[in-house]
Length: 246
Length: 244
Ligand SMILES: Nc1ncnc2c1ncn2[C@@H]1O[C@H](COP(=O)(O)OP(=O)(O)OP(=O)(O)O)[C@@H](O)[C@H]1O
Ligand SMILES: [Mg+2]
Image (tube, rainbow over all chains, first blue to last red; front, side, top):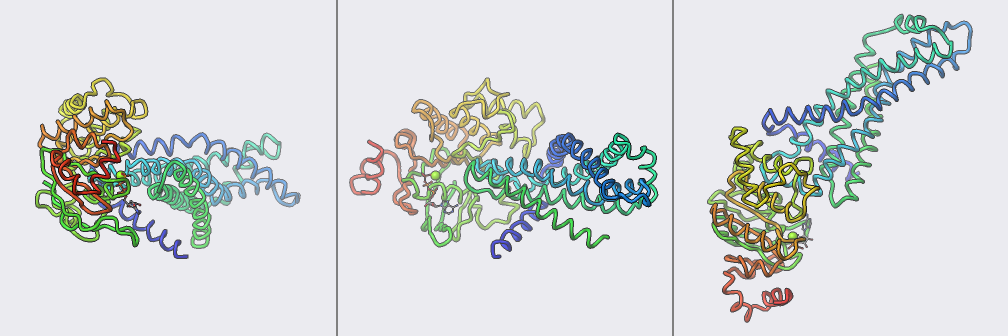
Protein backbone atom coordinates (compact mmCIF):
# COMPACT_ATOMS: atom_id res chain seq x y z
CA UNK A 1 0.00 0.00 0.00
CA UNK A 2 2.86 2.33 0.88
CA UNK A 3 4.46 1.50 -2.44
CA UNK A 4 1.27 2.35 -4.28
CA UNK A 5 1.13 5.82 -2.75
CA UNK A 6 4.85 6.30 -3.35
CA UNK A 7 4.47 5.43 -7.03
CA UNK A 8 1.35 7.51 -7.42
CA UNK A 9 3.02 10.53 -5.85
CA UNK A 10 6.15 10.08 -7.91
CA UNK A 11 4.06 9.73 -11.06
CA UNK A 12 2.16 12.94 -10.36
CA UNK A 13 5.35 14.87 -9.62
CA UNK A 14 6.91 13.43 -12.75
CA UNK A 15 4.05 14.52 -14.96
CA UNK A 16 4.07 17.93 -13.34
CA UNK A 17 7.81 18.35 -13.84
CA UNK A 18 7.37 17.86 -17.57
CA UNK A 19 5.47 21.09 -17.83
CA UNK A 20 8.12 23.19 -16.11
CA UNK A 21 10.82 24.91 -18.15
CA UNK A 22 10.07 24.07 -21.75
CA UNK A 23 13.02 23.98 -24.16
CA UNK A 24 13.35 25.79 -27.46
CA UNK A 25 10.10 25.61 -29.36
CA UNK A 26 11.70 24.62 -32.64
CA UNK A 27 13.41 21.58 -31.13
CA UNK A 28 10.31 20.68 -29.18
CA UNK A 29 8.24 20.85 -32.34
CA UNK A 30 10.69 18.69 -34.28
CA UNK A 31 10.68 16.06 -31.58
CA UNK A 32 6.89 16.07 -31.40
CA UNK A 33 6.56 15.55 -35.15
CA UNK A 34 9.11 12.75 -34.94
CA UNK A 35 7.13 11.07 -32.17
CA UNK A 36 3.85 11.57 -34.05
CA UNK A 37 5.39 9.66 -36.89
CA UNK A 38 6.59 6.92 -34.54
CA UNK A 39 3.37 6.56 -32.63
CA UNK A 40 0.80 7.33 -35.29
CA UNK A 41 2.08 6.32 -38.68
CA UNK A 42 3.96 3.38 -37.22
CA UNK A 43 0.77 1.90 -35.76
CA UNK A 44 -1.59 2.19 -38.72
CA UNK A 45 -0.89 -1.35 -39.89
CA UNK A 46 -1.73 -3.09 -36.66
CA UNK A 47 -4.76 -0.86 -36.04
CA UNK A 48 -6.12 -1.69 -39.50
CA UNK A 49 -5.82 -5.43 -39.05
CA UNK A 50 -7.37 -5.42 -35.59
CA UNK A 51 -10.26 -3.12 -36.50
CA UNK A 52 -11.36 -4.96 -39.61
CA UNK A 53 -11.33 -8.29 -37.80
CA UNK A 54 -13.02 -7.06 -34.65
CA UNK A 55 -15.76 -5.46 -36.76
CA UNK A 56 -16.26 -8.61 -38.80
CA UNK A 57 -16.30 -10.92 -35.81
CA UNK A 58 -18.68 -8.68 -33.86
CA UNK A 59 -21.09 -8.75 -36.77
CA UNK A 60 -21.04 -12.52 -37.13
CA UNK A 61 -21.40 -13.13 -33.42
CA UNK A 62 -24.20 -10.63 -33.03
CA UNK A 63 -26.00 -12.36 -35.89
CA UNK A 64 -25.50 -15.68 -34.16
CA UNK A 65 -27.06 -14.36 -30.97
CA UNK A 66 -30.03 -12.74 -32.72
CA UNK A 67 -31.73 -15.84 -34.05
CA UNK A 68 -35.30 -14.59 -33.65
CA UNK A 69 -37.00 -13.87 -37.00
CA UNK A 70 -38.92 -11.05 -35.25
CA UNK A 71 -35.85 -8.89 -35.04
CA UNK A 72 -34.83 -7.28 -38.31
CA UNK A 73 -31.26 -7.94 -39.48
CA UNK A 74 -30.41 -4.24 -39.63
CA UNK A 75 -30.37 -4.16 -35.82
CA UNK A 76 -27.02 -5.84 -36.15
CA UNK A 77 -25.78 -2.64 -37.79
CA UNK A 78 -26.99 -0.65 -34.79
CA UNK A 79 -25.32 -2.95 -32.32
CA UNK A 80 -22.02 -3.15 -34.17
CA UNK A 81 -21.88 0.63 -34.57
CA UNK A 82 -22.57 1.33 -30.92
CA UNK A 83 -20.27 -1.29 -29.50
CA UNK A 84 -17.47 -0.29 -31.85
CA UNK A 85 -17.72 3.39 -31.09
CA UNK A 86 -18.24 3.01 -27.37
CA UNK A 87 -15.98 0.16 -26.50
CA UNK A 88 -14.14 -1.84 -29.10
CA UNK A 89 -12.47 0.89 -31.11
CA UNK A 90 -11.08 2.92 -28.22
CA UNK A 91 -10.45 0.17 -25.69
CA UNK A 92 -9.20 -2.75 -27.76
CA UNK A 93 -7.11 -0.51 -29.97
CA UNK A 94 -5.58 1.25 -26.98
CA UNK A 95 -4.83 -2.03 -25.22
CA UNK A 96 -2.93 -3.14 -28.29
CA UNK A 97 -1.23 0.26 -28.60
CA UNK A 98 -0.23 0.00 -24.94
CA UNK A 99 1.67 -3.10 -25.97
CA UNK A 100 3.22 -1.62 -29.07
CA UNK A 101 3.77 2.05 -28.27
CA UNK A 102 4.10 1.64 -24.50
CA UNK A 103 6.79 -1.02 -24.61
CA UNK A 104 8.68 0.96 -27.19
CA UNK A 105 8.62 4.19 -25.19
CA UNK A 106 9.50 2.49 -21.90
CA UNK A 107 12.47 0.65 -23.33
CA UNK A 108 13.73 3.69 -25.20
CA UNK A 109 13.59 5.92 -22.13
CA UNK A 110 14.77 3.13 -19.83
CA UNK A 111 17.79 2.55 -22.01
CA UNK A 112 18.59 6.26 -21.88
CA UNK A 113 18.39 6.10 -18.09
CA UNK A 114 20.71 3.13 -17.59
CA UNK A 115 23.27 4.43 -20.07
CA UNK A 116 23.35 7.79 -18.25
CA UNK A 117 21.95 9.69 -21.24
CA UNK A 118 19.28 11.19 -18.99
CA UNK A 119 21.98 12.28 -16.54
CA UNK A 120 23.80 13.83 -19.48
CA UNK A 121 20.69 15.85 -20.34
CA UNK A 122 20.33 16.99 -16.74
CA UNK A 123 23.97 18.02 -16.51
CA UNK A 124 23.53 20.13 -19.62
CA UNK A 125 20.74 21.94 -17.80
CA UNK A 126 17.90 20.40 -19.78
CA UNK A 127 14.66 19.43 -18.07
CA UNK A 128 14.96 15.78 -19.05
CA UNK A 129 11.43 14.69 -18.16
CA UNK A 130 9.93 17.44 -20.26
CA UNK A 131 12.41 17.03 -23.05
CA UNK A 132 11.75 13.30 -23.37
CA UNK A 133 8.20 12.93 -22.11
CA UNK A 134 6.24 15.93 -23.31
CA UNK A 135 6.72 15.36 -27.07
CA UNK A 136 5.65 11.74 -26.60
CA UNK A 137 2.55 12.67 -24.64
CA UNK A 138 1.49 15.40 -27.03
CA UNK A 139 2.17 13.18 -30.03
CA UNK A 140 0.14 10.40 -28.41
CA UNK A 141 -2.75 12.64 -27.48
CA UNK A 142 -2.93 13.90 -31.06
CA UNK A 143 -2.26 10.69 -32.96
CA UNK A 144 -4.02 8.02 -30.91
CA UNK A 145 -7.47 9.67 -31.24
CA UNK A 146 -6.80 9.88 -34.99
CA UNK A 147 -6.05 6.17 -34.99
CA UNK A 148 -9.27 5.55 -33.07
CA UNK A 149 -11.26 7.47 -35.68
CA UNK A 150 -9.69 5.29 -38.35
CA UNK A 151 -10.42 2.23 -36.22
CA UNK A 152 -14.08 3.25 -35.92
CA UNK A 153 -14.47 3.45 -39.69
CA UNK A 154 -12.61 0.22 -40.26
CA UNK A 155 -14.66 -1.68 -37.71
CA UNK A 156 -17.90 -0.65 -39.38
CA UNK A 157 -16.38 -1.49 -42.75
CA UNK A 158 -15.29 -4.87 -41.41
CA UNK A 159 -18.83 -5.45 -40.21
CA UNK A 160 -20.36 -4.48 -43.53
CA UNK A 161 -17.87 -6.64 -45.35
CA UNK A 162 -18.54 -9.65 -43.15
CA UNK A 163 -22.32 -9.20 -43.43
CA UNK A 164 -22.30 -9.03 -47.20
CA UNK A 165 -19.69 -11.75 -47.72
CA UNK A 166 -21.67 -14.20 -45.61
CA UNK A 167 -24.97 -13.16 -47.22
CA UNK A 168 -26.30 -11.95 -43.90
CA UNK A 169 -27.61 -8.73 -45.41
CA UNK A 170 -26.60 -6.25 -48.09
CA UNK A 171 -24.43 -3.25 -47.11
CA UNK A 172 -27.22 -0.68 -47.37
CA UNK A 173 -29.36 -2.53 -44.82
CA UNK A 174 -26.43 -2.61 -42.38
CA UNK A 175 -25.81 1.10 -42.92
CA UNK A 176 -29.46 1.92 -42.53
CA UNK A 177 -29.50 0.09 -39.20
CA UNK A 178 -26.42 1.92 -38.09
CA UNK A 179 -27.76 5.33 -39.07
CA UNK A 180 -31.21 5.02 -37.54
CA UNK A 181 -30.05 5.12 -33.96
CA UNK A 182 -26.79 6.99 -34.39
CA UNK A 183 -26.15 9.56 -31.67
CA UNK A 184 -23.33 12.07 -31.88
CA UNK A 185 -22.78 11.59 -28.18
CA UNK A 186 -21.30 8.13 -28.70
CA UNK A 187 -18.58 9.75 -30.80
CA UNK A 188 -17.90 12.17 -27.97
CA UNK A 189 -17.54 9.27 -25.54
CA UNK A 190 -15.32 7.45 -27.99
CA UNK A 191 -13.02 10.44 -28.36
CA UNK A 192 -12.94 11.10 -24.63
CA UNK A 193 -11.79 7.56 -24.08
CA UNK A 194 -9.20 7.88 -26.82
CA UNK A 195 -7.75 11.05 -25.28
CA UNK A 196 -7.62 9.65 -21.77
CA UNK A 197 -6.15 6.33 -22.87
CA UNK A 198 -3.56 8.08 -25.03
CA UNK A 199 -2.41 10.10 -22.05
CA UNK A 200 -2.28 6.99 -19.87
CA UNK A 201 -0.22 4.98 -22.36
CA UNK A 202 2.35 7.67 -23.12
CA UNK A 203 2.77 9.06 -19.62
CA UNK A 204 2.84 5.68 -17.87
CA UNK A 205 5.42 4.23 -20.20
CA UNK A 206 7.64 7.31 -20.08
CA UNK A 207 7.38 7.18 -16.30
CA UNK A 208 8.33 3.49 -16.12
CA UNK A 209 11.29 4.03 -18.40
CA UNK A 210 12.43 7.18 -16.64
CA UNK A 211 12.70 5.51 -13.24
CA UNK A 212 14.46 2.36 -14.42
CA UNK A 213 17.35 1.37 -12.19
CA UNK A 214 20.04 -1.09 -13.12
CA UNK A 215 20.87 -2.47 -16.55
CA UNK A 216 19.52 -4.14 -19.65
CA UNK A 217 17.47 -6.63 -17.66
CA UNK A 218 15.64 -3.88 -15.79
CA UNK A 219 14.95 -2.06 -19.07
CA UNK A 220 13.08 -5.15 -20.24
CA UNK A 221 11.19 -5.28 -16.97
CA UNK A 222 10.27 -1.61 -17.28
CA UNK A 223 8.82 -2.37 -20.71
CA UNK A 224 6.69 -5.17 -19.36
CA UNK A 225 5.58 -3.14 -16.39
CA UNK A 226 4.64 -0.22 -18.61
CA UNK A 227 2.40 -2.46 -20.69
CA UNK A 228 0.68 -4.28 -17.84
CA UNK A 229 0.13 -1.15 -15.77
CA UNK A 230 -1.16 0.88 -18.71
CA UNK A 231 -3.58 -1.92 -19.58
CA UNK A 232 -4.95 -2.17 -16.06
CA UNK A 233 -5.31 1.59 -15.73
CA UNK A 234 -6.94 1.84 -19.16
CA UNK A 235 -9.57 -0.72 -18.16
CA UNK A 236 -10.13 1.07 -14.89
CA UNK A 237 -10.47 4.44 -16.64
CA UNK A 238 -12.76 2.81 -19.20
CA UNK A 239 -15.12 1.82 -16.40
CA UNK A 240 -15.06 5.27 -14.82
CA UNK A 241 -15.72 7.06 -18.11
CA UNK A 242 -18.58 4.70 -18.90
CA UNK A 243 -20.06 5.30 -15.47
CA UNK A 244 -19.68 9.08 -15.66
CA UNK A 245 -20.73 9.72 -19.24
CA UNK A 246 -23.40 7.12 -20.01
CA UNK B 1 37.75 27.59 -9.70
CA UNK B 2 35.51 25.16 -7.87
CA UNK B 3 35.56 25.06 -4.11
CA UNK B 4 33.88 22.46 -1.93
CA UNK B 5 33.14 23.32 1.68
CA UNK B 6 32.10 20.65 4.20
CA UNK B 7 30.14 18.56 1.74
CA UNK B 8 28.27 15.61 3.27
CA UNK B 9 26.24 13.06 1.39
CA UNK B 10 24.46 9.91 2.52
CA UNK B 11 22.10 7.38 1.01
CA UNK B 12 19.38 6.09 3.31
CA UNK B 13 21.34 5.63 6.55
CA UNK B 14 24.72 5.09 4.91
CA UNK B 15 27.00 8.11 4.80
CA UNK B 16 29.22 8.14 1.72
CA UNK B 17 30.94 11.53 1.84
CA UNK B 18 32.24 13.07 5.07
CA UNK B 19 32.98 16.81 5.30
CA UNK B 20 34.67 17.12 1.93
CA UNK B 21 36.80 20.26 1.58
CA UNK B 22 38.67 20.72 -1.67
CA UNK B 23 39.72 23.26 -4.28
CA UNK B 24 39.97 22.68 -8.01
CA UNK B 25 41.93 25.21 -10.04
CA UNK B 26 41.44 26.15 -13.70
CA UNK B 27 44.03 25.31 -16.34
CA UNK B 28 45.35 22.14 -14.72
CA UNK B 29 43.85 18.65 -14.54
CA UNK B 30 42.49 18.04 -11.04
CA UNK B 31 42.47 14.34 -10.31
CA UNK B 32 40.32 12.59 -7.75
CA UNK B 33 41.75 9.20 -6.88
CA UNK B 34 40.74 6.47 -4.50
CA UNK B 35 39.76 2.85 -4.25
CA UNK B 36 36.55 1.47 -5.68
CA UNK B 37 33.62 2.42 -3.51
CA UNK B 38 35.43 5.29 -1.81
CA UNK B 39 32.87 7.75 -3.13
CA UNK B 40 34.53 9.36 -6.16
CA UNK B 41 31.57 9.05 -8.48
CA UNK B 42 29.18 10.23 -5.80
CA UNK B 43 31.38 13.27 -5.23
CA UNK B 44 31.44 14.06 -8.93
CA UNK B 45 27.68 13.66 -9.19
CA UNK B 46 27.20 15.98 -6.22
CA UNK B 47 29.39 18.55 -7.94
CA UNK B 48 27.35 18.54 -11.15
CA UNK B 49 24.06 18.49 -9.24
CA UNK B 50 22.85 14.99 -10.04
CA UNK B 51 22.88 14.31 -6.28
CA UNK B 52 22.08 16.91 -3.69
CA UNK B 53 24.38 16.91 -0.66
CA UNK B 54 22.75 17.12 2.77
CA UNK B 55 25.03 19.92 3.84
CA UNK B 56 27.92 21.98 2.61
CA UNK B 57 28.39 24.18 -0.39
CA UNK B 58 29.87 23.81 -3.85
CA UNK B 59 31.11 27.09 -5.25
CA UNK B 60 31.60 27.67 -8.95
CA UNK B 61 33.69 30.82 -9.01
CA UNK B 62 31.76 32.11 -6.04
CA UNK B 63 28.33 30.83 -7.09
CA UNK B 64 27.02 28.40 -4.51
CA UNK B 65 25.58 25.70 -6.74
CA UNK B 66 23.77 23.84 -3.97
CA UNK B 67 21.75 26.81 -2.80
CA UNK B 68 21.11 28.69 -6.03
CA UNK B 69 17.55 28.91 -7.38
CA UNK B 70 16.84 26.45 -10.19
CA UNK B 71 17.05 29.07 -12.92
CA UNK B 72 20.60 30.02 -12.00
CA UNK B 73 21.55 26.40 -11.52
CA UNK B 74 20.66 25.94 -15.16
CA UNK B 75 22.88 28.88 -16.07
CA UNK B 76 25.83 27.25 -14.29
CA UNK B 77 25.05 23.93 -15.90
CA UNK B 78 25.42 25.39 -19.36
CA UNK B 79 29.04 26.07 -18.47
CA UNK B 80 29.52 22.46 -17.38
CA UNK B 81 30.60 19.62 -19.64
CA UNK B 82 30.70 16.06 -18.47
CA UNK B 83 32.24 12.91 -19.80
CA UNK B 84 30.41 9.93 -18.34
CA UNK B 85 31.92 6.61 -17.41
CA UNK B 86 29.72 4.89 -20.02
CA UNK B 87 29.99 7.86 -22.44
CA UNK B 88 26.25 8.58 -22.45
CA UNK B 89 26.27 9.53 -26.11
CA UNK B 90 22.77 9.84 -27.56
CA UNK B 91 22.58 6.68 -29.57
CA UNK B 92 19.81 7.86 -31.86
CA UNK B 93 22.05 10.71 -33.06
CA UNK B 94 25.15 10.62 -35.24
CA UNK B 95 28.56 11.72 -33.99
CA UNK B 96 28.13 15.21 -35.37
CA UNK B 97 24.56 15.52 -34.12
CA UNK B 98 25.79 14.55 -30.66
CA UNK B 99 28.30 17.38 -30.69
CA UNK B 100 25.69 19.68 -32.20
CA UNK B 101 23.15 18.83 -29.50
CA UNK B 102 24.24 21.33 -26.82
CA UNK B 103 24.79 23.96 -29.53
CA UNK B 104 21.27 23.47 -30.83
CA UNK B 105 19.76 23.53 -27.35
CA UNK B 106 21.59 26.55 -25.98
CA UNK B 107 23.94 28.03 -28.54
CA UNK B 108 23.36 31.30 -30.32
CA UNK B 109 25.21 30.29 -33.45
CA UNK B 110 23.94 30.28 -37.02
CA UNK B 111 23.84 26.87 -38.76
CA UNK B 112 27.12 27.62 -40.56
CA UNK B 113 28.86 28.66 -37.37
CA UNK B 114 27.52 25.50 -35.72
CA UNK B 115 29.07 23.41 -38.46
CA UNK B 116 32.41 25.12 -37.99
CA UNK B 117 32.23 24.66 -34.25
CA UNK B 118 31.37 20.95 -34.62
CA UNK B 119 34.24 20.41 -37.00
CA UNK B 120 36.59 22.35 -34.75
CA UNK B 121 35.64 20.26 -31.70
CA UNK B 122 35.84 16.99 -33.58
CA UNK B 123 39.20 17.78 -35.10
CA UNK B 124 40.46 18.98 -31.73
CA UNK B 125 39.84 15.49 -30.36
CA UNK B 126 41.30 13.91 -33.49
CA UNK B 127 38.10 12.61 -35.08
CA UNK B 128 37.82 13.94 -38.59
CA UNK B 129 36.15 11.18 -40.54
CA UNK B 130 33.37 9.92 -38.32
CA UNK B 131 30.81 12.73 -38.57
CA UNK B 132 28.02 10.63 -39.99
CA UNK B 133 28.60 7.49 -37.93
CA UNK B 134 26.36 6.39 -35.08
CA UNK B 135 27.82 5.73 -31.60
CA UNK B 136 27.18 1.99 -32.05
CA UNK B 137 29.46 2.00 -35.07
CA UNK B 138 32.61 3.43 -33.48
CA UNK B 139 35.17 2.05 -31.02
CA UNK B 140 35.33 2.73 -27.29
CA UNK B 141 38.22 5.17 -27.61
CA UNK B 142 36.41 7.09 -30.33
CA UNK B 143 33.27 7.26 -28.19
CA UNK B 144 35.29 8.83 -25.38
CA UNK B 145 36.61 11.41 -27.79
CA UNK B 146 33.12 12.19 -29.10
CA UNK B 147 32.07 12.56 -25.46
CA UNK B 148 34.88 15.06 -24.91
CA UNK B 149 34.00 16.94 -28.08
CA UNK B 150 30.38 17.20 -26.94
CA UNK B 151 31.46 18.30 -23.48
CA UNK B 152 33.54 21.20 -24.81
CA UNK B 153 31.17 22.22 -27.61
CA UNK B 154 29.67 25.14 -25.69
CA UNK B 155 32.97 26.73 -24.64
CA UNK B 156 32.76 24.90 -21.38
CA UNK B 157 34.33 26.40 -18.27
CA UNK B 158 34.08 23.30 -16.11
CA UNK B 159 34.78 19.80 -17.33
CA UNK B 160 34.09 16.63 -15.35
CA UNK B 161 35.29 13.20 -16.37
CA UNK B 162 34.33 10.00 -14.60
CA UNK B 163 37.05 7.46 -15.27
CA UNK B 164 37.87 8.58 -18.78
CA UNK B 165 40.27 5.65 -19.26
CA UNK B 166 38.10 2.79 -18.14
CA UNK B 167 37.89 0.09 -20.76
CA UNK B 168 40.64 1.55 -22.95
CA UNK B 169 43.95 0.02 -23.95
CA UNK B 170 47.12 1.73 -22.61
CA UNK B 171 47.82 3.62 -25.82
CA UNK B 172 44.34 5.08 -26.05
CA UNK B 173 44.38 5.80 -22.31
CA UNK B 174 47.48 7.95 -22.68
CA UNK B 175 45.95 9.69 -25.69
CA UNK B 176 42.83 10.60 -23.71
CA UNK B 177 44.99 11.77 -20.79
CA UNK B 178 47.04 13.98 -23.03
CA UNK B 179 43.95 15.31 -24.76
CA UNK B 180 42.30 16.21 -21.45
CA UNK B 181 45.51 17.80 -20.22
CA UNK B 182 45.96 19.87 -23.39
CA UNK B 183 42.35 20.99 -23.64
CA UNK B 184 42.34 22.02 -20.00
CA UNK B 185 45.45 24.04 -20.52
CA UNK B 186 44.48 25.55 -23.84
CA UNK B 187 41.00 26.76 -22.85
CA UNK B 188 41.76 27.35 -19.15
CA UNK B 189 39.00 24.99 -18.10
CA UNK B 190 38.54 23.78 -14.54
CA UNK B 191 38.81 20.06 -15.13
CA UNK B 192 38.01 17.42 -12.52
CA UNK B 193 38.88 13.83 -13.39
CA UNK B 194 38.01 10.68 -11.44
CA UNK B 195 40.63 8.08 -11.99
CA UNK B 196 41.75 4.64 -10.98
CA UNK B 197 44.70 4.74 -13.30
CA UNK B 198 47.89 5.39 -11.40
CA UNK B 199 49.70 6.08 -14.65
CA UNK B 200 47.33 8.97 -15.31
CA UNK B 201 48.12 10.24 -11.85
CA UNK B 202 51.88 10.33 -12.46
CA UNK B 203 51.44 11.69 -15.99
CA UNK B 204 49.06 14.59 -15.60
CA UNK B 205 48.29 14.84 -11.87
CA UNK B 206 49.13 18.45 -11.18
CA UNK B 207 46.54 18.52 -8.45
CA UNK B 208 45.54 15.29 -6.77
CA UNK B 209 42.79 14.67 -4.26
CA UNK B 210 43.00 11.27 -2.60
CA UNK B 211 39.65 10.08 -1.22
CA UNK B 212 39.69 7.37 1.40
CA UNK B 213 36.38 5.97 2.67
CA UNK B 214 34.52 9.13 1.83
CA UNK B 215 37.06 11.55 3.33
CA UNK B 216 39.67 13.74 1.70
CA UNK B 217 42.81 12.00 2.87
CA UNK B 218 45.41 14.01 1.02
CA UNK B 219 45.65 16.80 -1.56
CA UNK B 220 48.80 17.69 -3.46
CA UNK B 221 50.97 17.63 -6.58
CA UNK B 222 52.20 14.46 -8.28
CA UNK B 223 55.80 15.38 -7.37
CA UNK B 224 54.90 15.14 -3.68
CA UNK B 225 53.31 11.71 -4.03
CA UNK B 226 56.46 9.75 -3.33
CA UNK B 227 57.41 11.74 -0.25
CA UNK B 228 53.91 11.50 1.13
CA UNK B 229 53.64 7.76 0.64
CA UNK B 230 56.26 7.12 3.30
CA UNK B 231 54.06 8.45 6.09
CA UNK B 232 50.61 7.91 4.58
CA UNK B 233 49.94 4.17 4.67
CA UNK B 234 46.51 4.41 2.97
CA UNK B 235 47.92 6.34 0.01
CA UNK B 236 50.88 3.99 -0.10
CA UNK B 237 48.60 0.97 -0.15
CA UNK B 238 46.54 2.49 -2.96
CA UNK B 239 49.59 3.18 -5.12
CA UNK B 240 51.28 -0.12 -4.30
CA UNK B 241 48.13 -2.02 -5.24
CA UNK B 242 48.51 -0.50 -8.68
CA UNK B 243 51.94 -2.15 -8.96
CA UNK B 244 54.15 0.89 -8.80
N1 LIG C 1 22.48 5.86 -5.89
C1 LIG C 1 23.05 5.31 -4.81
N2 LIG C 1 22.28 4.84 -3.82
C2 LIG C 1 22.81 4.28 -2.72
N3 LIG C 1 24.13 4.13 -2.52
C3 LIG C 1 24.97 4.56 -3.47
C4 LIG C 1 24.47 5.17 -4.68
N4 LIG C 1 25.52 5.50 -5.44
C5 LIG C 1 26.63 5.11 -4.77
N5 LIG C 1 26.31 4.55 -3.58
C6 LIG C 1 27.25 4.05 -2.60
O1 LIG C 1 28.26 5.01 -2.41
C7 LIG C 1 29.51 4.39 -2.24
C8 LIG C 1 30.53 5.05 -3.14
O2 LIG C 1 30.22 4.75 -4.48
P1 LIG C 1 30.96 5.42 -5.73
O3 LIG C 1 30.24 4.98 -6.93
O4 LIG C 1 31.12 6.85 -5.49
O5 LIG C 1 32.38 4.71 -5.68
P2 LIG C 1 33.61 5.03 -6.61
O6 LIG C 1 34.65 5.58 -5.74
O7 LIG C 1 33.19 5.85 -7.77
O8 LIG C 1 33.98 3.58 -7.08
P3 LIG C 1 34.46 3.10 -8.53
O9 LIG C 1 35.87 3.46 -8.59
O10 LIG C 1 34.25 1.63 -8.49
O11 LIG C 1 33.61 3.78 -9.55
C9 LIG C 1 29.33 2.92 -2.52
O12 LIG C 1 29.39 2.22 -1.33
C10 LIG C 1 27.95 2.82 -3.11
O13 LIG C 1 27.32 1.66 -2.62
MG1 LIG D 1 32.89 5.47 -9.93
